[in-house]
Each structure stands twice: as structure tokens, then as C-alpha cells.
Length: 149
Image (cartoon, rainbow, N blue to C red; front, side):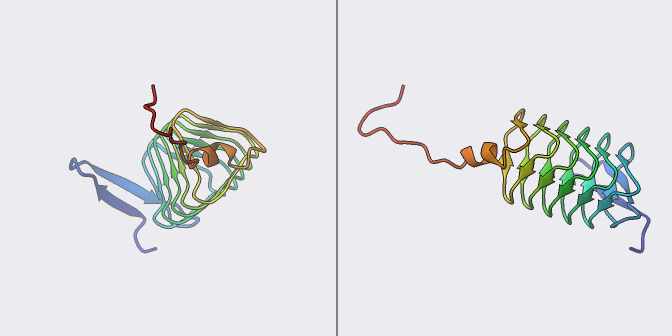
């Protein structure tokens, strides 16, 4: 990593100056709090107000939105999006390419498999093993010749 700071311009023309995290090189916005022992993968963004706990590992190309809180020793895969204001407990595992909505609560010790989707405002309980995300992919039953009310 050559540059300690990287400036990024959004679609509205606002420029944010991100600092590179010493452990992994991820991009940390001003106002975000990331533990020194956390590993933030390259091209991962941690936005303003977000908090990442000690011993966390966040993969390449993930995005932690504003005001999200990630507990200690949590593992987040590559290409994961964590929504605004989401709270993730300690020792959680989130598989790569998952999408966690805004305002979600993920309980301590929960495990979400790769490509999981959790809708806004949901709760994921420990031991659930992605049961919440699996229901989102269930096909709807079609009525035969009848109009649904």
C-alpha cells in the first residue's frame, strides 16, 4: 500500500478522504472506529460512524455502511454488504457475497452461509444457520385459475 489516505468522490461530487487500515489496507472513513487488531481486507469500505470490534476479519471488497456495529472476533467474507445501523454480535460468521439489510440485529454466535440475504429490520438468532435467508428464496405457490385476494 503506497498511500496512507485515499480520496473518493461520490456521484454528488462530495469527496471523502479515507485512511488505509494498517492491518489489511481497507479504507476507513473519518468518524469510523476500527480496532487495531481487526483485519480489514483491501477495497473494503468502513463508513462514518461504523464500529468494528477487536479480532474481526473482513474480506476483500466488502462494505460496512454508516452506524453499523460489528462485535469482537466476527468473520465477514468477501463482497459482503452490511446495511446502515445494523448490529452484529460477537463471534458471528457471515459468508461471502451476502447482503445484510439496514437495521438488522444478528445475535452473538450466528452463522450465515455464502450468498445469504437478510431483509431490512430482521433479526438473525444464534443457531439459525441462515434459516431466515433461506425463506427469501422459496418460490411462491401459484393459484390455479384463481386470482389471489
